[in-house]
Image (cartoon, rainbow, N blue to C red; front, side, top):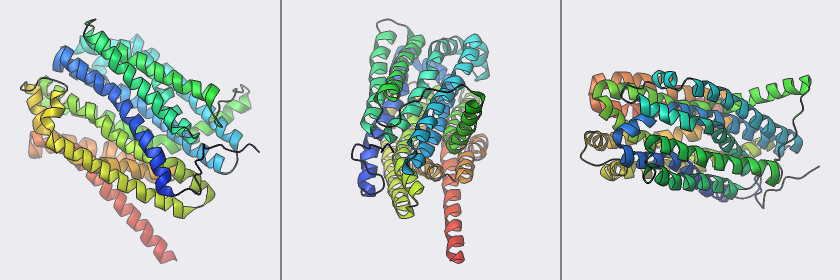
Length: 456
């Protein structure tokens, strides 16, 4: 039987804290680089096209986040299933899961890409664009959308590459994407003067580079999890559909996590537009450029714990599973608190990176950021806990809590709090939603422990 090479990473024996640290540092850096792709766009667009440019890109953000969520859903599900197969010595089954995941992502992104490219104006209007912002939104849509398939490839492959024992290569894919985007943004927006179109084109090229690097690893450089040649028989296709369906069920909270960002952006755009007009959407757009950083901190924590948890879950080593969960939650709390402190202490600096201070949109952002930051500790802890449930194949609680934070609590908070608290309520909507979700998770886990204690 072929033995899994882990580049001296033994997921079943090495100290849990050391294992987590080995995964977490490169994963966090890679995730932050992925978030930097959109933030760099915003900084360049803010100084090159003003708050209208930021507002226009923020209109498109739900498409970007749903595509990212699709990649996270397939990637997380694939990684959990492949981890368990590897723990049980089923290397070929693990490779097959990876191959099926990449094939599904390709089809699932190319089809909507064709629809969006055929109807860019209708897409922009459906996303909530005003007539004033419509030309900018259409420009961004046409130049960014072709890169969605590369974005999905990279999102999925990073899970697999880390599981294959190469977290540093996964980080390198993200770093190349971010650096390429930064350089091309500056060139296309300032010397070339392409504005929003230039930002979209720069991001598309950088995502293509990262996606091709990640795909190249799976085809030619993987230690164990290489892609297999697909079989096209009816039986093989039915088997593949069953497998990817199960992977998607496990990974679906990842999609719902990104849908939280999509709902946050879509409903937030509507509420800010209603209460504060285009300047409010511009201010909210700046906040939305920072939100992926917070999301990726949570994702990095969850994804660093996932291989350790899933592998030991496959072996039945529950003590190591629980140890890893404790380390992950403590990390989440520490990271969330650190980011909150930065937002509370330096809202002017964070806003000034994107647009000139003293403008109406900047004033709205500076006033709102400290309230917005109240969500961050809860936000990161929730993503970490949902990732734990995915890693041990507890699909129902993972789905439930992802739905609570993304839809059940978030949309009503956005719609009701402005009437109760004015403009401050809009900024606090995310914090209320995330805090309620954390409380729900705590009640669930306490109840589960109580039932176990009374059964024994």
